[in-house]
Amino acid sequence: MRKLLLGLLMVCLWACGSPQAAATPTPVARSGPIAISDVWIRATAFGEPASTPGEHNSLEPGWSSAVYLQIDNSGDTPDQLLRASTDIARLVELHQSINQNGTGQMRYVEGIEIPAHSQLTLRSGGFHLMLVDLKRDLHRGETVQITLEFAQAGTISVPAEVR
Amino acid sequence: MSLRLFARSTLVLVLLCSLLAACGQPHEFHGTLLEPPDPASDFTLTDHRGQPFTLSEQRGKVQILFFGFTTCPDFCPTTLSDLAAVMRELGDDAKHVQVVMISVDPERDTTERLARYVESFDPSFVGLRPTEQELESVLKAYAASASKYDTDSSAGYLVEHSTYLYVIDQVGRWRQIFSYGTPIADIASDLREWVRIGAS
View 1 (cartoon, each protein chain N blue to C red):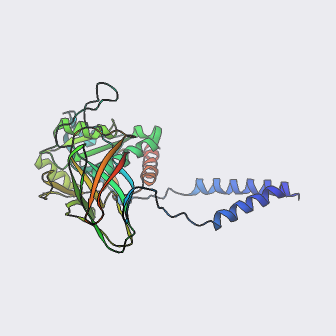
View 2 (cartoon, rainbow over the protein chains, first blue to last red):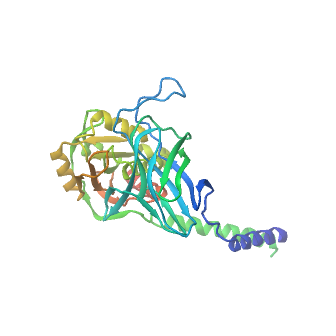
View 3 (cartoon, chains in turn purple, red):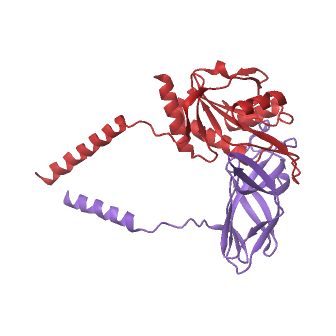
């Protein structure tokens, strides 16, 4: 019993003392000082189900989804995300969602700046990449390739997990 | 007192205390409460199956109203997918809860399109397509807003709109508002309480 109590005490002390692990996901791609991590796309099921499993249905224009990701710039100069593209949508646009006094608005932006030695997360309610006119439904668990174009770091192709 | 006996009695005491605390404490709501609750303004709109949907005929289920549109790529799918997660978390209680999205873009959101959209998140979700005039009066009744604006986006015009969730209880009273981004667990916990209150 004493041993058990001592053990519990040690576990508690260890839990208190251990530093909080910093949330730095492993980069999936990098170019120079720019590293990309945690890339994901929201799953959709807007079309009729594909007739054969594994086959993809096609969607009429007008359906969209969004890509979220984290960008780390470890360099001494700022960089800018200028454009993005993918096979699964007619085009990709850079957008920013703003929720002010309970009203949500989405703005089209020309570029997204990543200051030197900083980290920027594209997340719901903030910056994101809008997939305009999805060509097909996106299913949870599949991986889709997205190409990002930076002013300094150039083109970076990253796998995005559909969630 | 032996150490073992001491440990056991401490454990029993701790369990008793937490049990008492759980029984005596009222539920702490996460969303903003409307005190006193207002009778929810009634409306009849066409649903995603082309059938009339009257709010006051939905008594017995907690209604979660949300204004959105199917071309919206960020706020709306995030909210609806959070609500789908809330429904999963509610388990058996989910059958006493109904999620309703009122389209703020009736021009592009046809009933067929609404059906595909809302059902892609959860087959139980309801989508409503008001006429422009109906939309205006529902927005007014819930102190919400929606307005079209042009952007450089090739997705065409977009609609800025209220991002709150409006909670109507089982007897048709407007009880609560959730802000955008309220954690799934908090929404589920409050809804479970509304279901419990409605059943008692």
